[in-house]
Image (cartoon, rainbow, N blue to C red):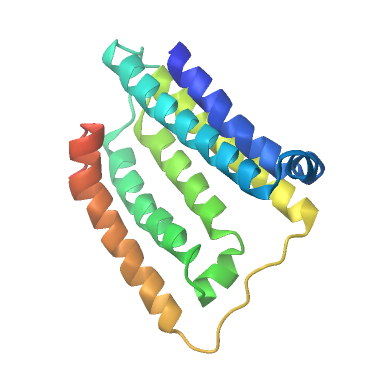
Length: 188
């Protein structure tokens, strides 16, 4: 439990620091952009690994269930994850979908966290996915307040086809390879 909480604190904390543009600018001015990005990446990866390993340990040690999700939630989660994967791919490909979602990576994270909250009722899952969802909501508000530039839709729909196709491939890879073999929980 402690390892996951520390990992979340590191991972989400470094992302909150990055969202505070004044603090971020001061840090970059002190250490340089390359050092800032390197340190940010090192902390983010370390936090992510600590979170994942701590989550696995907590669940393996018997994290208590607060509720037992109905079977329908598992099906809803699978459907929501299709949209999360499409949104994640949209964050990297110019498309109408990217322009419509405005901040597709944050949309993907929010859908991912909500979907996993719906399908899991143990304390470890609720803490992990609830924390990530809360951070994503915070970050979306912070991005809107900063007035970051929004993506512009391209003149054709080739990017949209790539986003949907790539999202479906990503979903299949996560559902059939990553989740059963890395997470240890078969999805299908």
